[in-house]
Length: 219
Image 1 (cartoon, rainbow, N blue to C red):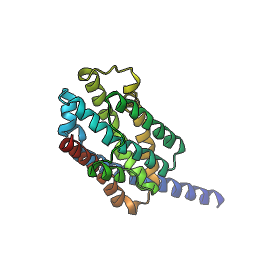
Image 2 (image 1 turned 180 degrees about the horizontal axis):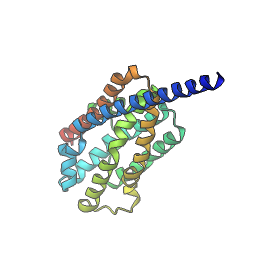
Image 3 (image 1 turned 90 degrees about the horizontal axis):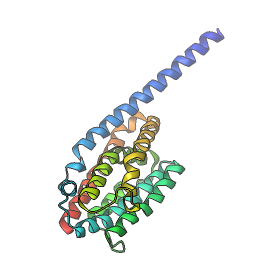
Image 4 (image 1 turned 45 degrees about the vertical axis):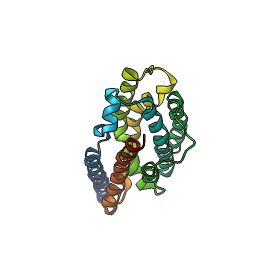
């Protein structure tokens, strides 16, 4: 009798784990689809970056605007409850500032409305919302960072091994691990919240696109 109860408990536990895994996969698949809809590598600003068509002034303006998003990611990592990840992302703000200094970016001005909205969208306080944003943003970062780094080296006089390029080198690699961790943690999110969390993630992705719209308009 005890053996039967134990077997039944094991089956229930396995079924629960399978349901959680299925829920996480469905949520992340929805976020992946949203990322395709808002693929910033297809934004005109990043396409011009890749072709070497941006002016130094445009790069500098962008560096000042996007810094607000970099700070927001550190906030999201803290809200997600991963102290080590939060510490890393907070340190990455200084790496971004190395890049900003290299392009002589002004960092003491107020952000564009689009940049401010992106920072808000990227920094939710609730744990599962923060995880959804982190998965959306960080799963896209390796390809984006590789493209940016290649453009900086090929067209804008950067040395790929220089400290001014370290932010991009690091995010081309580390965010693979960070995105995987966020995906695994999202397995704990209640199934009833999938639509909400997918919408939060899509707002973050759209906000990144709008940030670039604002940079293109104002730079």
